[in-house]
Length: 482
Length: 74
Image (cartoon, rainbow over all chains, first blue to last red; front, side, top):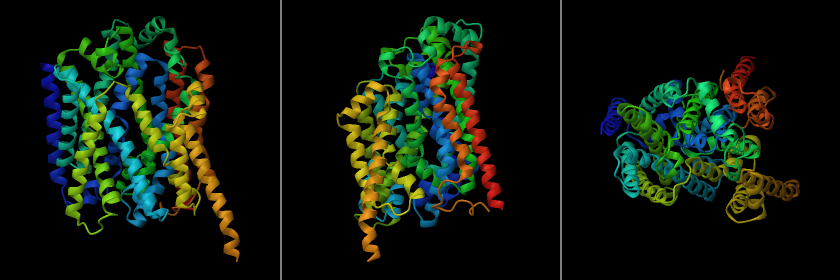
């Protein structure tokens, strides 16, 4: 009861604070102010917003669950941010500059403009929306989990519907700039709370120190300390970690919301400096892994054996009600804030890159309306997808990365190789998705070796783009001479 | 000036090479680090290796930032 009251109280206070902050900041209510913060976010706000995008439920609930269920494979979290930052340092200022130079707002704008192709823009918009809906599904699953653990008697469908409704309310009353406020609250809460839990958890579960905690964990589950972890049949070996880490790094800034976030920065320098500090923030994943290890030592039994719920269950079992409530609130914000930014991105892409090409005469007010209608529809779709057999949040997340990663050749080549035709990218996408989704020797080989299927399909995709591009260039060259 | 050092279509430069270091450490080092039986503070070596890799990544990116700034000043 106390736990539920604290959870609801903290989440409500943060949402009200966010709306108030948004009102104070409110200027022109145009779609560009609303969606990309008027291209004026400074380093501090940008850093929090970016961190807010990275510290999702995928990381916190998913990775602690992985550390509990598997062990060593959870170290994937420690590679994901730093490798993405190394790429992002080079990539994001280029995305930013091309956006500013040509007045672009979305990733689909970028493709349509750079490759001078309307159909490619619409295709990219649809791929982006698909990947984002999967990502929203993660947030709704997690938020539903928090509701069920803190409120008790709620069935999965109701929890999902409530979660989607909360996310939409948040988006409608806030927008991108005020989401930075909530992201700040959530990040401060998360770091304090997770830090506090990590420092006390060893004693709570009966170990004398953190070192003792790891000693006990290894005694209980010797296989957890090294890859492939406690369940070799899951296929999470050395090859899996290496290829998945690359897949995540390549895909991070290809996500439409991350891509669009680059446009919101005030200067290229903001993006570069952000890339330096972003990895350090991911050191706090150690705490998350530690908590998963503590749940293993404590013998925590999450409801239905759902690994995503193990951290919530550990806190509920071993800590006073107010800590459980605060943790519930932090976890709820962890899903709400990124979830709302994702919905915002879906709305913007749908309006600009699917509706506008069909109805170019819409004014800004009508665009905002179309954008909001799309968000309601896609939130409902994501909520519907989240009601089903429970999968690891990490698995769902990696599916989203594989889906969006297919757009990587078009983004990277835009800055590396001028003159690639849209049709080459279309061919690459077709080959890549076929390799990923259809049963084939490639899929069988990937499953057997642990090689990330998304990365294998992406390599085929990239090779196809280069081959088609080279073939077309060869075909064109004699004509150019003549 | 910030804008001068990387035009929109500018590809990779030699001074960007340190950006590969995080990949060599955090991805290339996995087969070796996973096999190390040493357990400082009873922690799995792979975990400590990847933690160190995060700091290495920040340092490598900071180094490239300095190199970019120096190149832009010239």
